[in-house]
Length: 129
Length: 466
Image 1 (tube, rainbow over the protein chains, first blue to last red):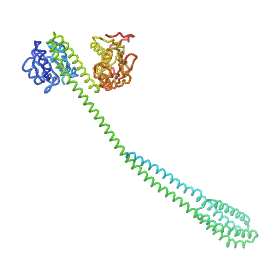
Image 2 (image 1 turned 180 degrees about the vertical axis):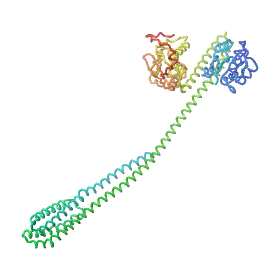
Image 3 (image 1 turned 90 degrees about the vertical axis):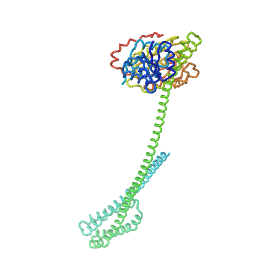
Image 4 (image 1 turned 120 degrees about the vertical axis):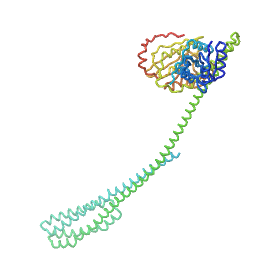
């Protein structure tokens, strides 16, 4: 039903999301850090990005900023932040996305958030310095 | 120890200096007394005696050579002789220096007797009109006697003058010696005081450095522990998330298997408890941080939303929850902080009233000019006597308590309160407990004051929120 890019450095979380989302009909692309994530965006058109915050090489907010800078339509892709950061609300405000879930989240909350992002298609409006 | 010894030596030097001063004062007093009671009055009387001796000779000479006034001059001679005797008598009663009385007895007394003999002869001749013989006696007997007595009196005068000069010289010498000794004592005291002060300053500096090092170590350790706690809290949540996703997968694949559903439900409950524990550790670790400058939290809105959150969680069997009317204001902290503090008290109240016959929670807010106090009263079993302070310690659990938890909730409230310049406490009721915290009140912002509608009048009875 939708092309979803999952970006997380935790293999168990990446596999867990694949296991949940693929049976629902979604095509799941995976990346393990922000650099890989940007490379995946060069290879395919995605409908939403499920993005972790703390990752090596390029963090989630840094990847979101690159998506915004590089333009080419990527700045319009909805971003769902999935993170164990306690101040996730503040990070989401900086990234400019209304879609975020604090780890660990329930599967129902995850599906609800993905559905909402795919329907609303609200692009991030970053407040980077 | 060296400082104490130094101060003891200074004290001893001070005492010795005081004793020396007293001794010197006594010596000077002795010399001064000798001057006052001996030398000076002796010189005075001897001087007057010599004057009266001269008057006597002049009167005798006039009587001899001026017959017209002989009678009158003889009378003057008698008066002068009496005055001479009186002065010498008074002088002789004064204390004498060594050799003084001996000199008087050896020379003055015989001279005086000799003079008296000569004068008596002269007076007899003048009275009988034999002026030529009287003149001869005057020149051959009286005048030499007067001169010899004058010389003896002069010797006594000189002796007393020399003794006075000697006393004065002694006073000066004693004064100079004592001044030198006092100066030496002052120098020694000053030197020892400087040494003692230097030692004391060195010791104080070492102590201050040691205290600062200890404080720095404790602060660094606390920071490390806080950072560790934050890291642990965060790093626990990713694996928990993987567990949640896996449980979700299992649930979706085997949702018709009752046993699997029950197992997944148990695992999920444990998962959410672990999440709450990790969040509790995180909140505790971050609660010691200083508040952001200018932070404001709306009291009424925060209480309302935090109470609503509790009722949502306790929706299966909600407690009676009252919020008493209060005057709204803003609190000098982040909304998240205020909500977290109230939430901790409400969670505790809800947890510990679960088994109580009456399950009621009351929230009060008392708004003062500078501070706001928020109270949460419950009808739970209360805190046992002796644990009133310990309940606010981290990881403390009242003995015998079986309700789940790490024991960080009240400790988090206390840390937040302390970081914001506030306070926490509790008091026992007949049936239940009141836990409270105080925070500084934020000054009203002009824009907020303009936007805020007028506060409603407080209602006498607040309806329970359930």
